[in-house]
Length: 185
Image 1: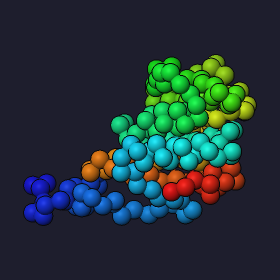
Image 2: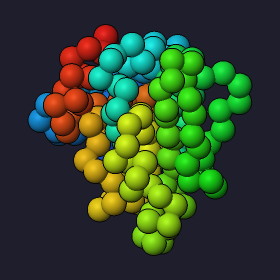
Image 3: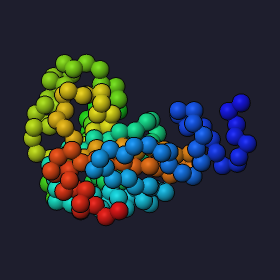
């Protein structure tokens, strides 16, 4: 049980058969854009395209996806494209890692995976960070729901069985719409 008689098929998370090299058939949110990253080269190209957009300067980008989907890898590529050098570490334990690009852009990389206490939000000054200038990137934003403003751009990354990534981009604000129109696919 659980094995297909047809090669190249496997069960998805809903116990439905799907081809290993095809995206599952799901409803795409209205206005969303779908991409497929076949390798880390595609991730880097997307990050460079996003980094070139002036609308990115004060944007809030929410990154969603399971563990290992590629959220932190994408952030590393984006930060490199923005000129950040040196070690770029995941903020999983620190919750936030600040960076400053050579052009003065302040960047805050959040990881709310372990975020559990809403009081931590106020005590850490996150409200002030989100109200101020700079690029805000948040992994696991659902764990801080109700605290963060609406994301300008939500990026959902899903690891596929063939090691590619299915990427859904959804603009939630005019700034997010501007980002989407400027990103080269």
